[in-house]
Image (cartoon, rainbow over all chains, first blue to last red; front, side):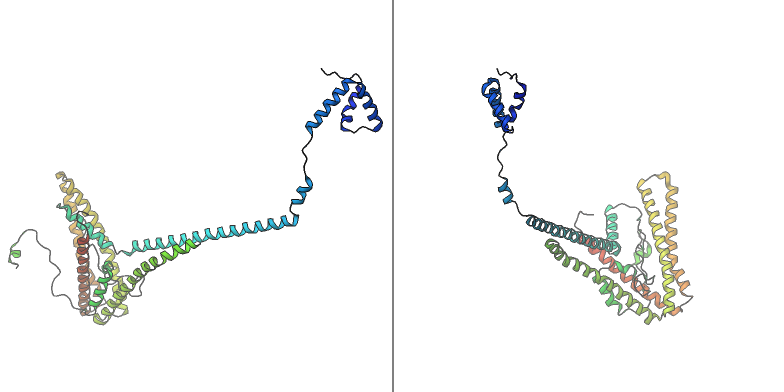
Length: 214
Length: 162
């Protein structure tokens, strides 16, 4: 077991001796003591071992400095990277703007088409016809909820779009082909009241007058 | 960007054709209106002032007619429900509803008479007769065409699909 040297002054200088930081005179004096003292020799040996174990690895700083880029190169590279990033960001923003614009235009077109279809009224007659057919198919005897003149026909009414005071009323429910046909027939339209009455109401129960009909 | 352009290019012809199909419609309706106006001016002999008055009168009568139709639809619906219910203790109510339907029908049938009275304030009898003739011919033909349209739609409908 190692013991401490009784000469405390020398003992305190042992680390300095190991690190070589003592002056020449002090160094000789301490070294002379260590040569005669077993305890101090053991301690110096121990201190050498500790120092060896704590030695830092060698770093070749000169090589590192040599391979590092110069500050001007670093600045140039950084600026290039920034430019590339900015261009990418601008492109991305443009893409999103274009996509948003396309989506808005598409939505507007679809909305307009839906609104026009809604207000077109072209399918009103179809809906009415299908409702009538549904009622007929029920085969039940009950009053109809649709009045006889469910589709009013007007020749004149406030003109909403056209400059003409004339409106075509229920003719709006006709198909394009039917409207063209009507237009052709109107060339020969005579302002004469009809000689025949409108379709008479048919009696459900046979009467004397109905028996006489051919 | 290319994708967006491709989508827009694909959609453009579809939207353009749909728009084109729809844009024909107002032109057709305008042609019919214009033709009717020509007939009323040339054959009935209506001037601008008379056309204006006829327009105001017809608008008013049309509003009444639509209102009567709506009321009749409501009453008929209630009457229909009562018949479906089949409760004989509600005969009084059913009689009232039936009377209302007949009354509304009568009110609607009175509209032509009211129209003629008011037309007489600014049209000669001959003009009224001619206007009546144009109105009648046009209405009858439109009704016939609508009837044909309904029949075609009924035929196109697949069986068993109400």
